[in-house]
Image (cartoon, rainbow, N blue to C red; front, side):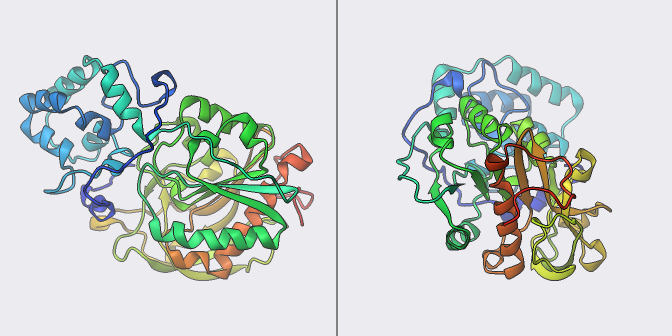
Length: 388
């Protein structure tokens, strides 16, 4: 996320209180937030929770310690937002202005501070092993909509998405189940579904074993549909997810104004993924930019945005133009099918016929992997599976 400004993120701070988490602990050996030592690359929330450590940082640099706790103004960092940034991020984005010697001293302090068992348990409170009660299937195809958010919460969009997904499931004779319980990510429970929807998920939500279950589900033919914030965290702490599954890392979105009308262009020739889509269309949304085009990783680009049709500038004029700027794409991951759409910040997008059609096409295509037992790498071919 090169060139970002601290001010860009002030507006996304949520409520200034610690969120409540499920009161079901996970084994620290299975928890990504349980480390032997602290690190400059770990979630900032897990660092500032240790008040004694923060005091030691203040002894090195009062300014750095203050910015750890209040990076975006005079108010405390919201913990959920602290889950998607790291101390390294504060230095990289020049939110903390210190010399290299001071930065090295802070880095050394973190790396030589042992994380206690009590701290591990507290850091791991945002994960859970709760297995939801899944009703018996009534349809041959079934959608799992996952909604555990440990980062930025798109509350209005998530609420608006529920009836939209229910309607799409009914229209296509699919069953649907909603849960925010991460314990569903085990082989037995996931075997009941054809496709998983990562519904505006932000923040690390899965333990190591749950990550393994999701990965196995996908590479063995399961579908994965990711919406908006599922590709929009400032930092990821699971590289496979960002670099291999989504295939792009978020760099920013416009701020002046945040929501702009822009021209979208349908590029793919895949008959399933582009069914009933116009050649081009204008709509208003929050337009994501990425560090580099996912096309470089071999995805099938479905929709691009015409950068001349809006102002791709972030806070303070931060340049967000990519040149080649995909917004919706699909790819194979083993035998599984992965679909991502950057559309979905605004609640209105889930009643917009174009955005909903994209989601429907993605669900139909991604849910067909278990049936076919394969995912063709030639997604542009007319024989690509999943046509309804």
